[in-house]
Length: 270
Ligand SMILES: [Zn+2]
Ligand SMILES: [Zn+2]
Image (cartoon, rainbow, N blue to C red; front, side, top):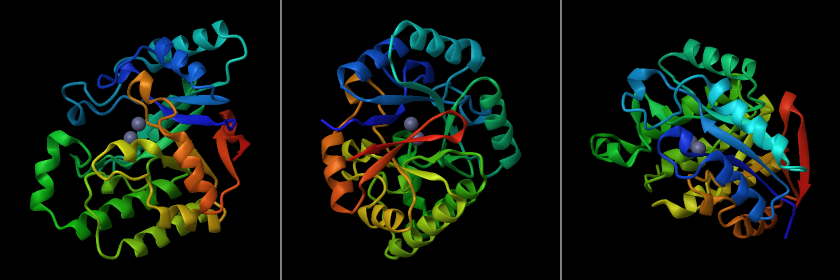
């Protein structure tokens, strides 16, 4: 078993996952990982999450950071980074900046950047999938990657999560290669890490995020890659990491990044 880190894990605090923070940490230990980053969804604007099912509520320092600090204290030798997943809100970039600044001030050590919303549409939510029928796939891709590139260049994020999430339900534009080329170029220029997510393996698309072409371009351009399961239940921690390692190695990667506080990175050999 390689010494790996799962850099994308949720808990029940976000309102749509199973498992307390303690149970998720037990799963991290049971998986034999070198380390992990807990990455709960930062609180969203109420109008984007009226039912409280997308993100954690309340004071992140009291509710979340304090609990993980206690866990880290209790588990001797546990390599655990207190992170969070932030939403790039294209319609209110100032809010996005404030959300991330506030999170870091309250003790969040690593921030994942995610595009889940396009003009308020949660395009990856199964409950909103019918909206895809009224869309042109290439236009959605164009919108998605325009915002993804802005997010990658914003300097706000340590890691760009699930880089081609727009593919979740299998919607792929004919000229996908052009988007992967541009996105990997932007990530390299911005010096941001990119995630390879095994969550896509258990979604309709049935493949890693991002597509292997984008992974290859990221490797060629020297972009550091993290591995994440996007676990929403204890049994999903380190989900199919062995397969992911094989793919990464086959595409030329020899190490993966394990982000730490203050933008430091621990490199793990594959
Ligand atoms: Zn996400
Ligand atoms: Zn996530």
